[in-house]
Image (cartoon, rainbow, N blue to C red):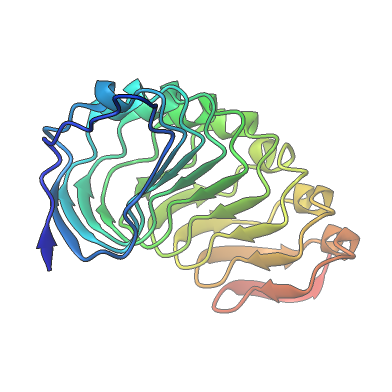
Length: 226
C-alpha cells in the first residue's frame, strides 16, 4: 500500500490541471494539509477505492470549477463539510462507503446542478434538509445504509421529477409513503426497504409505469393499496 502526501504541490507549469484520478491505487494519508488553491481549475477529482482518512477539509470549496467529486470507498470520518455547498458546478458528488457520521448539511441543496448524489453506506443521521427540494435536476439519489429518520418529505420528493434511481433503504424513515411519489414518473428503480414505514401503499405508485424494480420489504404496511 502506497502512502500519498497531499501536502505535495502540483506543478502545472505550461498547462492547467483539469482532472485528477487516483482511483484504486491503495493510497493512504489525509487531505487536511493539501493546498487546493494550486489546482483551482480542477473539474474532476476522483480518489475512490483508497484508504484516505481523517476529515474532508472545508478548503475543498476552493475548487469552484469542480463538476465531479468522488471520494467514495475510503476511510473519511466526521461531517460532510457545509462548504461543499459552494461548489455550484457539481454534477456528481459521491461520498459513499466512508465513516461519515454527521447530519446532511442543508448547504448541499445549493448545488442545484447535481445529477448524481450518493451518500450511502455511512452513518449519517437526522432528516433530509428542506433545501433538497432545489435539486430539480437530480436523476440518481442513493442514501441507503445510513441512520436517516423522520417522515419522507413529500414537499421535497415532488420536485425530483427527473429521478431515475432512488434508494432510501436501510434507514429509519417513518410514517406513510407520500402519494407524491407518483409524480416521479421517470423512475426505473425505487427502494424503500428496511425502514419504519407504515400505512397503506399509495395508489399513485401505479403512475410509475417505467418502474423496473420496487423494494418495499421489511416495513409495516397494511394490506391493500390506497
